[in-house]
Image (tube, rainbow, N blue to C red; front, top):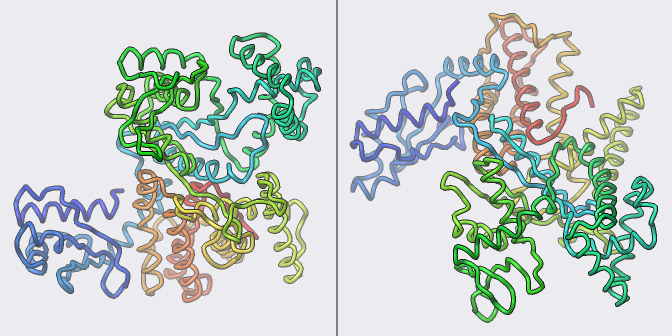
Length: 585
């Protein structure tokens, strides 16, 4: 099933070449859905952009394009409006045929990528011996959704958790562990993450205040880097305990991710330095080995280098990220690497990518992309924190969302005088609460900061997960009330569009492929959220205007098919956001 937009684009390309010659082949027809149905379904705005190069009036250009434009199998005769807009209205038969094809396709008309790629999505990335907090929320949720979309498009996706599991901080943690909890070196299950977080703070306090402890910690770093047995055992104990707690959150959020921490690249760092040096890119600056990158200066306007090896011989994040680039392009065979990391790291990635490019470590057909996002803010517009000023633990935030969803559900059950099981209540509260948190994040443009509000995200009205879930539940309610098995409607049944609300819903359903393909390429999940929100709105308008079960056949079956296709689209779209649907709420 070829996308409607792709078909129209191809027809405009043929018309442009026929009207003005082959030099205009591949010109963007600037096709957009119309804002008002009275102007049709799509509008082509290219005539205005061609006025200057063709030295003609836009309306005259539009007339010549329309004369050569053959869309008779798809649209009513095109109309020229205003200064040169070309308006297109789909034929009813075309819309009905497209809906039928979409209904019969398990992918709902979204074609897989013609050239599947190996895509690495680097996301989440918490630090060992620290709990995941609200700061990890966006990377984890956005990264998972991007990975889901890439997988759905048929790409081979490697989901990487680049955890902070190496570095000088482990010196103080190992030293503290050996002294206050030596049993952890023989039975790592004796330490749990709750202890470990407090334990991190204790170790940091000692490191800051006790010079002897600081000396022993620095010696422990050397032991760890040289592979000394006790240091390695302590390090593994710390990592394992953190890993178990991270996994509880990933399981709860239905997120699949493969850990490959900073330690993985440790054996490769010396070669990074050696190869940069061999290429003449490395220079010594104030005792450190650095690479100067174009376009970066300090406050005084002096060139700002990227440090590759510190004055004490140690490595840093940049060295690890360069080693990771080499491994991902050479060993993993990645075609595209997506770093879902906060916007504050923009300069770091720009520098690292530039150094990798200078060293010729990025093949010409490989794309490295920093996928930045803003911070989560409280309703006061400041960074989202507890009243005491502490960073909010991710576990507590999710618990609160589920608790509030449960309270709302129990209030509705009581008001409707329903009887529901505890298992039903728990399942719905978890799906709504966690779905609301995910959707509230994903529905924002990821590059912006956003204000976290439980009340807004759990509302049954507006651009929220509960609103989408409720639209899906409405269709399932039709199935139960009418004893309808959507999977066994008559094979010869077809959708026949009559009411304006049916046409509006149909046109929107047929934009799914375009939206999913855009998200796969441009990495903005909020576009999919907006599509689903508008789909839910159009479905609810159709549902309110058009009787379904009360209608007589063939209208009744037609509307049942339209309901089912809407539900399937909502289910697919929400699954790409990592949100599960519910049969009942």
